[in-house]
Image 1 (cartoon, rainbow, N blue to C red):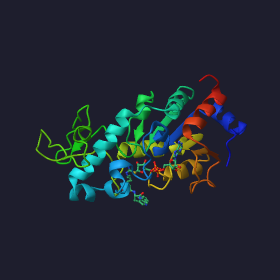
Image 2: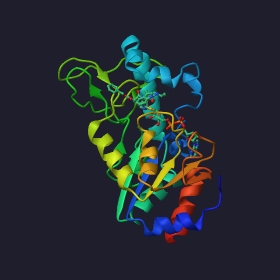
Image 3: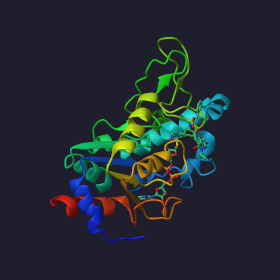
Image 4: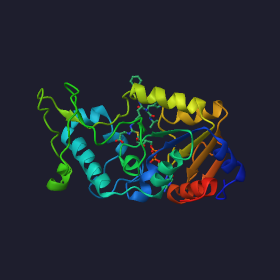
Amino acid sequence: MSRLLPEELLAALRRASRVVVFTGSGVSAESGVPTFRDAQTGLWANFDAMELATPDAFRRDPALVWGWYEWRRAVVQKAEPNAAHRAIATMATRVPTFTLITQNVDDLHERAGSRDVLHLHGQLARPYCQGCNQPWTPPAQPSLEASGGTRVDPPVCPECGGRVRPGVVWFGESLPEHEWLAATEAASRCEVFFCVGTSSVVFPAASLTSVAIAAEAVTVQVNPNPTDIDGAVTWSIRGAAGEVLPRIVAKAWGGD
Ligand code: BV8
């Protein structure tokens, strides 16, 4: 475990032509967005995210699940990207080929300036009709904000009258093929692979670190807490992403 930034890591970063950053909900924690396995807060204290993020939960109680996603959309809307999101966007300008892969469904990477983000688990901002797959554009103001409750009936598709669902990948659902193929390709060819703010317990996304290790990339974990991959990665840096990543960018390339 290290808080210091090993010179070998910084040198590998400077000479790398292909770098991948793989993020989880911990990268948005310093923006005030609860991590996925944090005890739910406020209205949602008695619900388990793992139970709500499933097709069965939506089938059983669409208003409860839609209300949860509307609450999360409101939380993200009020949040701002943090120094970790900005450092990742800066890193992309310092290396020839950079790939950002995220498990997060928020848009904070994009709002920090990152482009072509590979969202393996979908996006809050992309609901769609489960009948005809027509994308549904959410109103600027999340409905829960208005209702203040925990239950909100999901919208009805204007095209086919079907039920609109959150634009995320639920447990038991397949990952989007394009994003998954692009992510595994990037992880298998990179020279440096960062795994930031994830407990690495959700698969197949968490297997990307093993893909990078098998490709003999320098692998770097950034997390304030221990995880199961502490002993598998080249460097495990114990710290908050918003503190560690800006330091890495500054020490590797100078400037901000
Ligand atoms: C599928 C969207 C197959 C919804 C999410 C092996 C192979 C394949 C599948 C499985 C497998 N084993 C088990 C499975 C099934 C399942 C799974 O992985 N279950 C787990 C729980 C055991 N996987 C699936 O169902 C996947 N689908 O495999 O389909 C298939 C094949 C054919 C046909 C049909 C199906 C789909 C998984 C996607 C689920 N959807 N999100 C939503 O958001 O509501 S996953 C959810 O977990 C979020 O996306 C989240 O990002 C992700 C991972 O969690 P983390 O990001 O790691 O968050 P967590 O809270 O756990 O950890 C936060 C970390 O941050 C902590 O370590 C903390 O210390 C750290 N941290 C805190 N503060 C900071 C910080 N780090 C840095 N800085 C800080 N400041």
